[in-house]
Image (cartoon, rainbow, N blue to C red):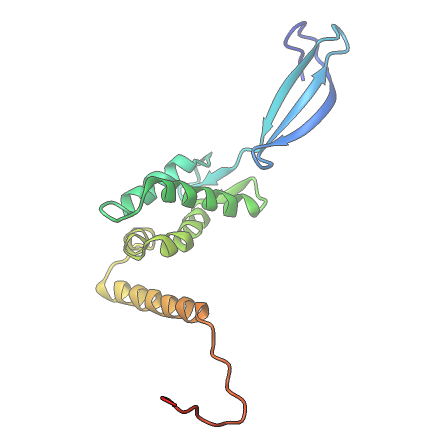
Length: 172
């Protein structure tokens, strides 16, 4: 790393710390030539590879824009959209790859969007999955209903069977 004061071509790392939940690394450096100290910030760049093969940096803002369109007219606030975009970024970064196909970003959006708003999910899924017929919508709605039923039944606590096999009397 070149010294910003004397332009010497090398520097020594004195201290390193993570910032922004590990997304950034701050390094305190010292120049062996002039002795001055300076700080550098390193950020891991995540690239999205589009279907055309073009690569562009991951953009949380772009995720929010797409989700906002799907949520138009729905009772979804801006904070929920921002939180969803953060979850998507965390999911994508957790894969540990420097480049990720845009298809995987879309898949990472679908699950939290389904939990946020089912109508917005259907809107997004219909565009993302390129629905061409009513049958495709019907299949997605059926899958959505089944997932909702499964999720709701998982939230209910099963009633423990009573011992003795007797039915309790009602009313005394």
